[in-house]
Amino acid sequence: MKKVLIPLLALGGAMVLQPAMAQDGEALFKSKPCAACHSIDTKIVGPSFKDVAAKYAGQEGAADLLAGHIKNGTVGAWGQIPMPPNPVTEEEAKTLAEWVLSHK
Image (tube, rainbow, N blue to C red):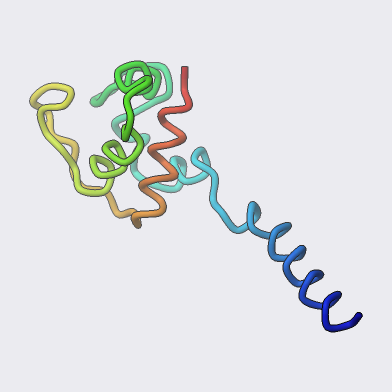
C-alpha cells in the first residue's frame, strides 16, 4: 500500500504546485520592458494588446507567431517602427503571447 500511496501523494503535490510555479502573463508583463511601448487598451508606441488580440483572433498558430515577435523582435507588422527583441525565454514569450491574445 505504501508503494502506491507515496508516489500518488508526490504526484498530487506536484500538480498542486505547478500553477504557483508558472508565472502569469500580467506579472510577466509588469516585470519586462513591454509597458514602455504597449498598454492593454491604448496605443503608445506599439499597438494596444486589445488591437493585437483583435488582429490575430481566430488565426491558427497566432500565439506561436506572436511569441516569436516578442522574443526576436519584428518590423512591419504594425508599421515601420520596429519592435526590438525582448529579454525573455521561449516559455515567457509564449506566456506573454497567450496573455496578450486573451484580451478582447
